[in-house]
Picture 1 (cartoon, rainbow, N blue to C red):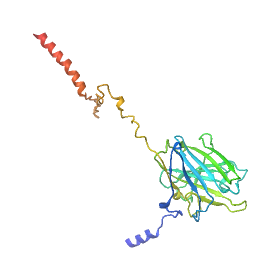
Picture 2 (cartoon, one colour):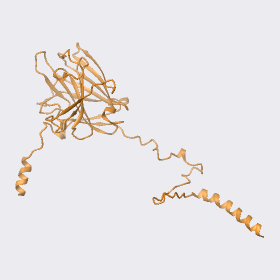
Picture 3 (cartoon, rainbow, N blue to C red):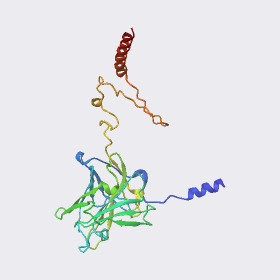
Picture 4 (cartoon, rainbow, N blue to C red):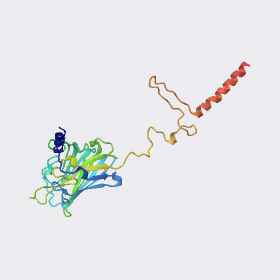
Length: 291
């Protein structure tokens, strides 16, 4: 029986998402006042060959937003559907994309952002429970002004480039600050070599499945920084806030009896000494009065 179970376990393979988890790309993202980290899109989905027309994504964060600058090179066609508006299927044409999932695990829910050369967007949260897009649900994000989600897109046909500067609020990811946290992301580009060519696909972290939604293949992103240890904690008084008793620690150290909530102050040596002098005077007065 043990041999049979061992053979069954050996023959039962984990889902193949078309990538090797140990070789995922990593990105260390700084605060925007310290610079940017750059992810390069140059590998093909399917073959993983690094000969895809290059694009880059500069990433940094503020205390309010995640900032992304997409830039595509060697753009030949800028092929788009002029009739499309936000949240139409612009991925069928020329786009650059970001998939963003807070946390270090393979995402089952994440935000998808797409932008076309004419600044038309597709935005939505994806629920992908099996991590391979065999079952999925989408919650579109429509009200970009309320979030706010902003994008400014330009193109330079003479240099065969186009660029989009994007700002995403941290509140949409339910975080106050990403400092010190790990996320999973991927960045992608679709490309047409000519108006009649087949669509091609490139990624920062590619897979062999030719699918953008293989979440175990998302790269690893670490946001730089941590809580500033130089700042005094709220419950720890700084030396400047000590008592006036010679700069010593607090005179009163309450202890709480959790049965009767009886506060028991423990006086310091300075306080005890100040009590002895008046007590001695009282005793002398009493003795003198009885004589």
